[in-house]
Length: 257
Image (cartoon, rainbow, N blue to C red):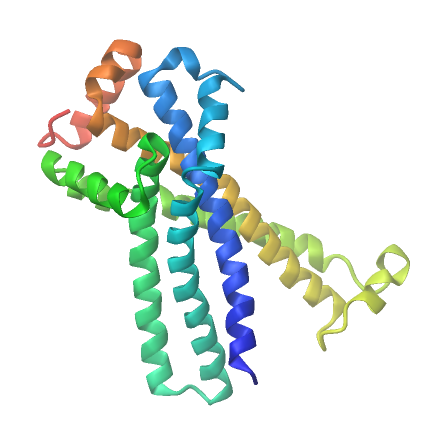
């Protein structure tokens, strides 16, 4: 087995997925920032929305690709190590390497989640954005609130559910469906129904994770904006600001809001 080809294949998949997901994240963060600080420019297809899209795909695209590439390299390396471990009968060293790579990828993805909020809000570079966002939360004393952010877990299980539904739909198609086109188009050694189920699960999982990430991006951007500009929120959206302060202090009474 040529693991170099495997690595490039996995790298292209993970990099594409990360770029699409992070472009969405940065665009949503910029749109939330427009609504937060300049609500008059935050309507559908307004200058705030279009400006956020343009910034993401031009001046901030390098930061998006850089952060996405770092995660993709770790994920691709982990996938190759996992494949090699399967071929070599479960090597102990490969198992340790796989675990370390997974931990590093998780840490980097967590860092990216907050860094890209600042990229979308202010157009900072990738490294500068990460420094600024964690300095902000450290100064506000909100490290525990970041740790308590469970929305990503909720969306992960929702994505698994969507992937399971798509897998069920794919499994319903067999070699006799649509005049037997699947019988000639797919030759993997598995049954047509099983292959369709696997493909359906992967497609459903990836697309739904990107879709749900828009909501998660908005939540993360709101948390950062609430730490960065509570006065602007009070001035532009007083009713929402009052409700958010009351709810915030109800769950985090020791954190000033």
